[in-house]
Amino acid sequence: MSIPERVWRIVKGRWVMAGDQLRSLEEKLAEADAYQELADALRVRPEPGTVPTTTARTGSTVLPEPPAPTAAGQHDPLEAAYELLQVKPGAGLAEVDAAYNERMSELRPELTVPGTPERTTQDARRRAVEAAYDKVRDVLNPTETRFERLEI
Image 1: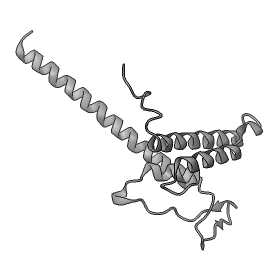
Image 2: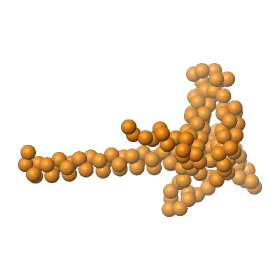
Image 3: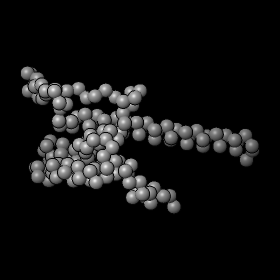
Image 4: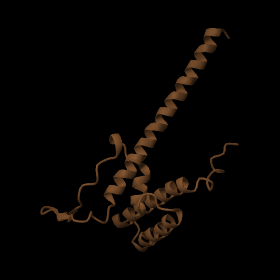
């Protein structure tokens, strides 16, 4: 194999690696946006002083607008995770565990009829809260998951 062929193989390999890293970054940004969107959609308690309004045409309740995105249009995925767990940002691991257990006791899809829209909604909310709890737990207690990240 000639030197130009070797150089081309190396460049091509680096190009593929860069594309993979870009896709990974796009996935992380999409996940952060999805967490924020889900937190906004699941917001149960309106801000003090604001009242949810009901539309006349559909009769559905419209909650107040969510707060504006943080610095430079970026959403902090942990902020959305804290909101899904209904704890204030910066809460300790014990408080997050208690909030997670409380949310899981509220979200009981097995109590609804399988195949109904309510069941699907409950399942989706439960998965979202579990994902938020995992994300916050990994940040608060990195030693618990350090062996899972090892590559052997």
